[in-house]
Amino acid sequence: MNVKIILLYLIMGALFFSVITTGLFGLTILASSTARTLYVPDNYASIQEAIDAAQVGDTIKVRAGLYYENLIVYKPITIQGEDRTSTTIQGDGTSATVWIQANNLVVSGFTIKNAGEYYSSISIGMYWACKNITICENIIKNTVEGITVWWNSSYVTISRNTISGCDCGIGIDNSTDNTISGNVLTDNTHAVMMTYCDNNTITENTFKNNEHSGMDNDSCYNNTVVRNNFINSPVDIDETVNIWDDGSMGNYYSNYGGKDLNGDGIGDLPNQIDASNQDNFPLMEPWSLVRTYDAFVWNERTYKVNIQTDSIVAAFNFTYSLRQISFNITGCKGEAGFCNVTVPNLLLIGKPWQVRIDGTSISFNKVENETHTSLYFALTFSTHMIKIAGTQALEKIPPHADAGSDQIVKEGTKVTFDGSRSTDNIGITNYTWTFVDETPKILVGIFSTYTFNRFGNYTVTLTVMDAVGNMDTDTVTITVLEVPKGLSLWPLGLLIAIVIVILLAIVWWKRRSSSK
Image (tube, one colour):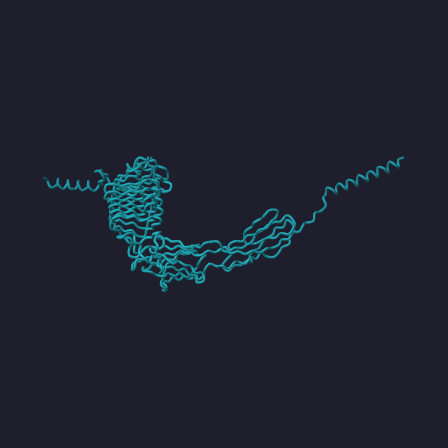
């Protein structure tokens, strides 16, 4: 064959291979040169219409609304709901609500419900060796199976979904190298069920009030299960050997009976799951990247401190007299980590701040606004005592109210109330004046004015308050004098008229008498 013809065939074959993607069942999809964004219902009336029209790499954005559809996703695309609480895909109850038959795709941001029964009872399902699938930030509830991964699927990421009221929240069968992370699974019969699955990662999920199990494993090996919260959700395993800690931290179990005598946040005794499975570092508190602590209560107000870290926090304490926050932090020994502590400015102010690790001062980054200050620092993990000290703790000293001198005024005179002589060691944030003039009156401000139109004695109360709710009151008396009322012109005119009439009558009578 001519060499030029052979080269031509090779080039054509290469070009053909580069512009197709082979899907399931021998399906071929032309790849788009430029990824597009398709909108539902702006461009297409239904999600399935947009899927059918999409090209490889396109993104379908679905506006908030209710979509009565059963989707078949057979192209490598992204399908994104506007908001997972208000963008709902509702199936017809006869089959899976979302069925995936392609690799390299993302489904996120939906509420998905009303799948069928038995084998068609899946809210989101995938089959025949799917790869590189991301299912994230969806709400799935009240179905038989929530998310199901079957038959040699791999590199599937199921993250930050909320799944409740299902017989099985997440099911994985005969699949490897998948990740289940950051999901919340509550009130299911089984939260996660895995059968014949190896080398999967299950991390930072919360399993709460799942009736039969939080984790149900059968013939599974070398799966990593760390930093999960098993709250009223048992672990049920059979012929399984998994990894339950990373060498420094494991999982939280609400039924763990051990103690933490050294205050590092790790149970002193391992949690023995069965003869072949043991968590050597059970957590004493539920795992979370962000933890919120009630640091102090004053004037019926709770001041909270947030700690964000990729390690374990234990023994948190705020000491008012020392103007100090302290806690223990534990991570995998020798690994780099971080800690970010956010403190209300009303609780503790640092001018300057001091951060110490095991008694040694360290450098840190500071970000502050009107209400909070965040202190960020890096560290190498083991178990450390962290102390953060400020120069001024929450002030308990109440302000001093001064309502000014008593005043005597006449009716109809504008009165100025003056609270400028009130004081506080930090600053007064509110001035309120209250009194009764026929009805209750409330005025606000350092200076306030009012006109009394009725005479009498009025007691005016000034209440001042500082930023943390400390208060004080003082009173001032306003004496309003009655303005004398002059004679009315109408009675005077009447009197003059009567006198004139009498005089005229006398004159007339005299004239009449003289004429006789």
